[in-house]
Image (cartoon, rainbow over all chains, first blue to last red; front, side):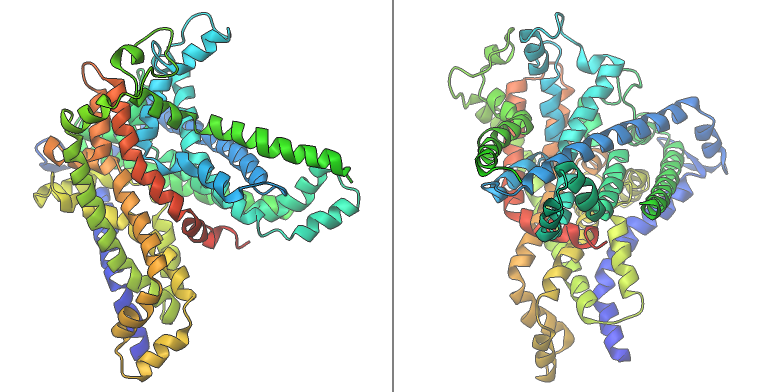
Length: 291
Length: 280
């Protein structure tokens, strides 16, 4: 029996070493670096908590926190709405070529964030973009909108691109959960004279609760750590209007060469993400008790 | 109950109108990417817009491949993603196997921990990982990227493979053990060959992790000769005058392997993804 366990440990050993080397060690090293002043010469000078003080007292940091939260929540709600709607469609009775549509609908999720960002950047181009062209042709706008060069529109554009890239993930998780709902529950509800809306609220939603929790929580985390799309589309601009925590860390480290401050910012980000996830879990728990 | 005729009509509308229209709208950015990639420069920079290129112009594809040096980026990406795939399988297959066959303290916690690492904000790692790679002299090398990509891919690979190992009856490896096989041989020679379809699907997933990654490539590459595709694409938009028709051609080519592999992989991915998500 003892030998058995030893073999088990031997089998997982390579993955343990890998995770220790690429995740645990860098994380501790990041914590370490956050206590030092470290510039382009990579010389370390111990400064204690000064980096944290600098980060946490900087109003620009807090506006980036709120901006990231706004981006993540708006994207998350939109992805949930779109993903749930599509999952319900794909689960409908009488749908032909179900597997074909499912594969087609996940395509946005398969290409790199960079490719997705480039495509949307060109769609939202103020001079030659198809977004302005279409809106002007149908007469919704008279003048082209400078999508990626105006503060509010830039945020709108990156959210649209982000939702487009992330809805399939939500859709897939919800669809899988939908398919576990026994058909006869719908049928008996229909026999009882319920409306489609009532069936959705009283049969479908309770079954989806856990999947919705998992999908939205994961999607939220993916949104918070989104970097590629923002970097490609706006680089955080114009000014700081689409600057997120991830682009801020990258800027502090690789544009300002302030590695200590960047490490402190990323540690603050990690703490906030953990707190947000735990808070969300608690919220979902108490919500499910009410239901 | 809805009368049959109305129901049949609704079914037709769903299948012939709603679904195609939705697909067209959702895939528009990809369709547009392809359209622009065939346009001549004059068509790309025309106002009002040219919606449809006058001819299928493949010059953009030739130019991005040769003049913009996407050839090199593709080779680099293939090397990095290929090595990531092999290493990720080598690391994750034994772990996935152990989680289904061996009872040891912390086995379950380890599985959960692996899933949790997927949620980890990677940007937290860029500074320390860069500093570490720099001190090892590994900036601008394949191993720097491969190592971190393996660690991104492996945890989910463990879960995907775990599902496939569960489907193999334990009698098989027990019989092998009785016949004098060592525990590793029982895994490597008996069980692993039986899960080949699962291994292939998992390998595709790992390959795509390496193929699509950008942040670490950006941080760990300063030499253009070591650039991967995502980095090559992103670096073009910073240029003085971006040729969007050529850029879109490069984007299309970089997306083809990803779309094709995911289309094959989708069924397996859903099983892996939903392992935790549907159990209420």
